[in-house]
Picture 1 (cartoon, rainbow, N blue to C red):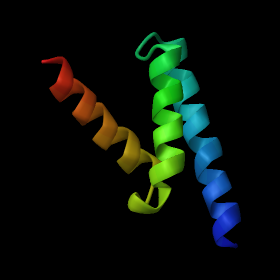
Picture 2 (picture 1 turned 45 degrees about the horizontal axis):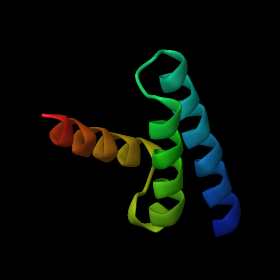
Picture 3 (picture 1 turned 90 degrees about the horizontal axis):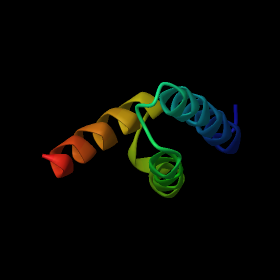
Picture 4 (picture 1 turned 135 degrees about the vertical axis):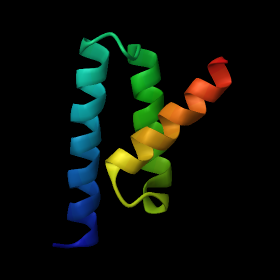
Length: 65
């Protein structure tokens, strides 16, 4: 699988994750959009969507304390 295809697959996976979080009320639409855009810009930093979501959730939790 090419790198571009893998990147697209990860973006689709992230979109699904964020959609389920907004549907459960864990994230606002604006937060989800911000996370999605940030991931698209920093995609090469994280191996998986799960790592990215976890790191962002920790960062946001720290900011909200």
